[in-house]
Image (tube, rainbow, N blue to C red):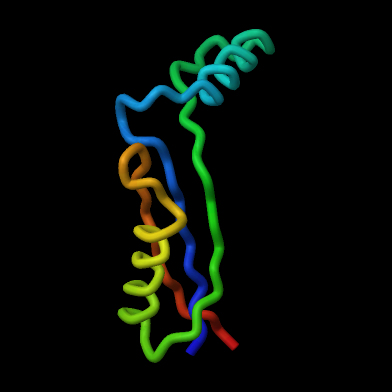
Length: 85
């Protein structure tokens, strides 16, 4: 079966996010002064072939732990969804 893995990676709380700060300041400059905070991150979509959803999710988590996310400064959420033929 095919599964679409979706991964969102963000910086952990307390980690300085200079890109987020720059975006927040730009939004203020454009008149969006109600913006309180901006956090940046990464988004991945990965097509996975697996026997079932549990195995696809497990492999997706392994990918995040070993390559996609830096566990020292980043956290992630992931989901493996069945692809309808």
